[in-house]
Image 1 (tube, rainbow, N blue to C red):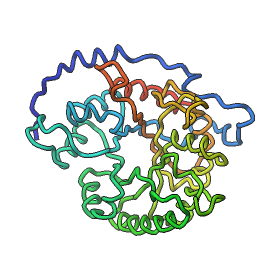
Image 2: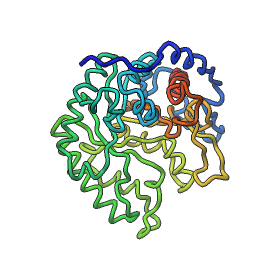
Image 3: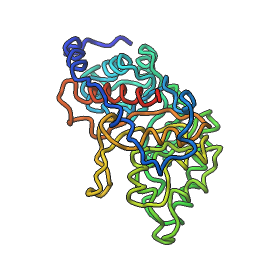
Length: 328
């Protein structure tokens, strides 16, 4: 379906976006690691990375203000111009004034195709997995995406027993997804790395990983939140999870942070090229097996940048920083 013209000066917008793009310093991007932290995986040769440079994706939550205000058509065109190849959804709605009604999933799929973009996955609520699973799987197939997942914790109860029960739910939902040719995934924040209140020596993330069926339940590691989890609940290496279970992590969220031990999370979220998380070490330490789509996300991009270009300016600068990282 053809889209009506919007009250939007694209040429001015592109000039503003280009003007906001800045060179990224390699030192701040790569987050150099102490020599003592170097592992055998740090010596992988260039070209052995398991995060394809030609599949850089974006979580649309990062530009949710632009999707809402301008609509998918304008946003997809701009993301394709920047260089993104894939998108991960965080809802399927836009401002109804754009079309005079809400956009449909087939219309979104056509906009993806028209801009040479692919849908890689979608974050949906865990209640929708529980109560509306088949419709969510239908939606995924309409959009042509191979993964569907949730950013909710497996359980709101931080006990081993609750995480074991949640794992069984995910096994059921994952088997249903597999039957439709899809992969179900769970996206972490930092809380999943806490210890069980009923068994204080047991890490909840380990319970979930151990008790979910690797044939049907996959994980999207949010690298930022994994490092926050390491700060809050020490005793694990985020890269080791991927190295030991490489085929369970088809997707990464790659967002950056500036170290600040004075704040509860240990990091302040930043644009990708501005932080000092040890990404160079991480991308080599995950090992040579598997393939992991790198998805840029910055939760606080809307409202923190001069607008225009706003969150889309952060998207462009972060794309360039991520592309630079994946050259190494």
